[in-house]
Length: 247
Image (cartoon, rainbow, N blue to C red; front, side):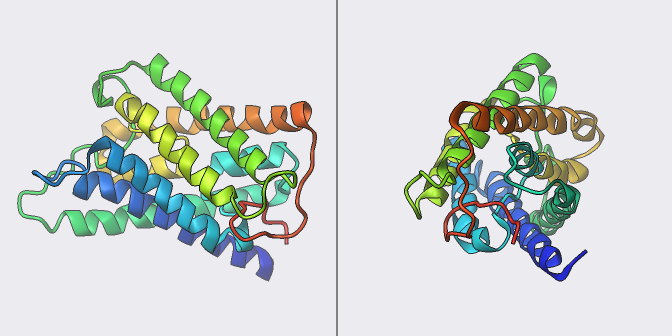
């Protein structure tokens, strides 16, 4: 691994750590807190804020993918080199696992702590609203597809400069508002992997869906965006834009 790629992978590790610690942390520590609980809307906002803040922090370094489905989609859209997909995905998954471990250490310090689902994703008996596998599959493909379309459009050279981070953070918030009741919202295989490891065997047994569906949705967007709208890509990192980390 070259020094430049190592630096970008480190940024992806940190960014994914922040996403999982902030987003899943809000779900585990604050969502259901008596009287002051933030609820689904608060968790949705937390995920959006973590992504928005990282877009302006590590965006100029790595592109702020912090999601294997985003990296895969950008690769198919020819916005990101195929040779760097695996190193990025490894860094993202490790960052998510590290964040889940820290979050578990914090949460388990409370007397009477019960792991529960630990902000993991699930369908059927593990769905917050009791939705079946088919519902989770559809919503994950559709939401990840929409997520990647926004990312590709917001980072297009034709888009207003400096606002991509806002659009991308807001669309992740919207996605969570739609799908938290269905499957706790994934659209990100790394985000799903970290908490599932600590939640238990049932959550791990359903993890396959939250890899396959986001990769399918992200891949479809990566193929369709350039075909429909052309390929106009900024060649220099722009603060706030999740540009591909090819530098």
